[in-house]
Each structure stands twice: as C-alpha cells, then as structure tokens.
Length: 377
Image: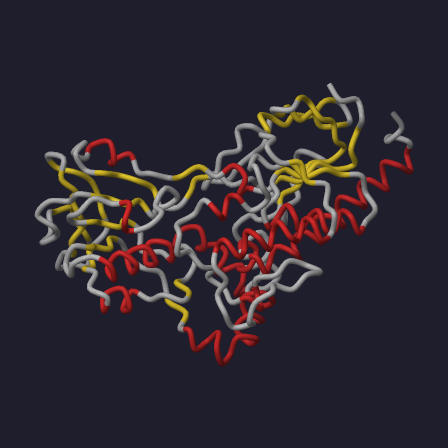
C-alpha cells in the first residue's frame, strides 16, 4: 500500500476529470488522475467512426484551452480525443493511464482506493461517471432469435461491419438518429428502421444564428437555481436530451423507416407498440421488416456505482448529491452527472463550471481540516 496521502484523487481522465484536474492544479493541491484507458481520450476513440460532437467547437472546450477548430464546426470524435490528450499534456496534469479502480471506501479520515496498481490513499475523491458507464440493453434482447445480430451503439463502428439485410436501430435519441442516418445513406432504401419516440429537435439554425442566446438559456437559465430549470431537470432523465445536429425528418428523408417503441419479442421476432383509439398503446406486430438481421441498441448507459462503498443513489441509479457533493460521505464528489447543476452539466462546455464549484467545496474542506490538525499524518 502506498502510504502517501493525496489531497484528492480523480477517477477518470475524460472531460470531467481533466476539468477537475485543471482547477485542482490552480488550487495548489496534491492530486492524481486515474484512467483505465491506455491513452487519454481512448473512450472517444472507441466510438463509431463517423461520430462528431453534438455541440459546436465554440461550446466544446475545457477551461483554459480553446478547441482548435472553427467555432461553428462540429469536431470529429478522434479530434476531440486528441484535444483531451493535448489538454492533459498542456497543463501537465498528473494523469496515470492504464489503471482500473476496483473500489472506494472510507478508512478513517481518508479514502482507501483499491486499483489495479495497488491501493492509494486520498483525503478526497472526485468521481466522474463516464469512467464506469455500462451499456444498457433491455432484458427483451434475450428473447430475440439468436440469428439476429445484436450490438449496443458503443460497439457499432460503421455500416461495413454489419451483415446485409434489415437493420433496426432501437432508440431515437441523438446517437440512434445519427447511426440510423448513416446506415440509411449507405444501404438500400427501406432496409433501415428507427424505433422509438424521438426527443425534441434543436434546429441547426439555433446554433448558427442564435448560438450565444441558446447557450445562455441552457447554461445559465436552465439550472437548479431557477424554477424553470428545476422543472426541466425533473423530467430530464425520463425523456432524454434533445436531438442536436440531426433530426428525425432528416433520417426519414435518407430512406429510414420509422417504427414505434420496441416492446418485446414473439417467436423470436421483435414486437412494437402501436397506437390505440383512446391514445394509449398496446403491443402488436407492425408492418416492419419481415425479417430482422441486425438490431443496434442505442439505448444509452446505466450508471454503476457499487464500487463506491455506502453510496446512496436515486431512483435512476445516479448518486444522490447536492450539486455533485455527496452529503452522507464527506469528501466524496462527482463531476459530469446528468443535470448536476444545469442542462449543460453533461456536455463538454458545461463541466468546467461544475468542476470549479466542486474544487471550491473540496478546497474549503481541506483548509478546514488543516486548521483543526486533522490533516497531520
């Protein structure tokens, strides 16, 4: 066991972890950032080939370093991965790659963090959820014909990696719409299907002509400090983020066929919801593909935090925090939670503010402990 006690240990070197590192460094604290990837940014490099950020470059930078691209452009995922790596190098952040965290627990006045490189001790821990997200695939997947190729959106790379035949993309959020659009543009018309109810779409013109005003709305108005923001936050996890840069109409124009929500399987075949006269839904087979060859589950991720001992979670499985501060485990913090403070908390351009707030709370606690002599070891 390493007997050195860090002021802070950051788990995850994605945008949230690096933003936290930037502010920890400015605060003059002794800290380290752990990441399971071989290189900073590898989580992004492993996404599908054509992926681009859903927000323009002007809103896709971390504190202290602009993104090196035209302000209105949407950076490619590899370019963003390289930006994260450059960011860590530019500020000489103490990132340790190739280290997986197994558990976090209180051990007296410090945290004992068990990792693949041994045990580390820290007075405070900053966790970023992106480092431990698990693909969410509905249980109904097990009832589908084993001859149907199934993969989560995190496993999808390009159209070339799929067999010929009908493809159903399940989940009409931004990722699902992006993948369905790419497939529809490269495969025969009528062989690509998009299943699910889409979220609201934000037109490109909003970013192009009213970008600053829109960003002010989602970053400064839709926060937990405003009545409107709290109302949006209450339904955020239920309905998902709005479609950005791609619309369902665009997907349909490319030749994809819309289907209702996938609700189960009958004799190994997918079954979808259809509307009823009273506005409700019931499960019934639709006029979808006669045979499905591939299903891509663009159904998001589920949070997994059992590795943090004693952590309370909400009804959606996310940590119970007050703006990223865990009230029942002193010294434990989060950055990058959905709607941690604002609608932008889960976006690249929003994590810097949340990280700054968390480091302010962390530093205040460190100073308080130092004044009482609790840091002596």
